[in-house]
Image (tube, rainbow, N blue to C red; front, side, top):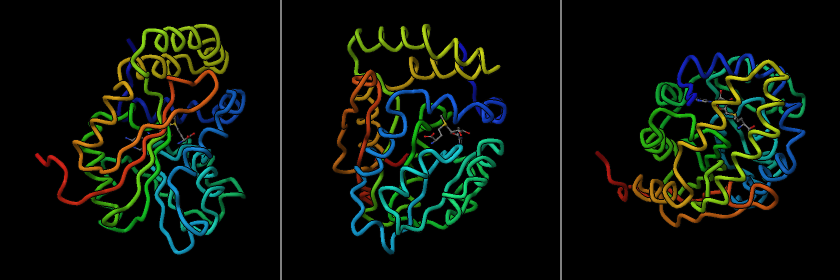
Length: 242
Ligand SMILES: C[S@@+](CC[C@H](N)C(=O)[O-])C[C@H]1O[C@@H](n2cnc3c(N)ncnc32)[C@H](O)[C@@H]1O
């Protein structure tokens, strides 16, 4: 099993950043699904007057989805990989976005508590060493009753979903990753999904962390039962703080 963490993961994403946009553009539904998850934040009035944080923004695919859902919001993107972030910064469509180069684990030093109305995280959580700690941070960064949407590969729990994921990895994702020179990063993708929470388990994790009104929403296409949107609201005092 290949699970990359911390600096090794950032180095793999730095290298993988060159082919990242091309590979995700070839994945049916990738951008449309991110936009759907961003809309599921339900931000009113195009996000006017709202501050939104895109955690693990990468090359800006999720940031662009947030901009489409909330064109008037003030958006900050944060990522641990300088290579991924450089690609996001270079995109003219993201010119109004503030970018922060820092791992989630260090964001408490960089961002003020209670300074975001909404947080979005696209394909981030299964990469983290300590997802519970990151959720505590997210709660702290959100205003009371702030909104969270997590868009993640989380298997539905049926053996069919696991079998489809393994087949998609063997037939499409691995060969494409190898061709791009990023075999290790795409082995990490396969194994991090297999190793991470199922969708019901991640919903329970969100509730334990103090998020209220948690809902698990499906996405269509081959990602059915494989990729989900999780939405919830920060409910101060409701979490099982250590
Ligand atoms: C699969 S990419 C997703 C990028 C983007 N959100 C998207 O939807 O295309 C995951 C991103 O999470 C970032 N990441 C992984 N671990 C991180 C951490 N601990 N702190 C901040 N970013 C992290 C990686 O650098 C990478 O850019």
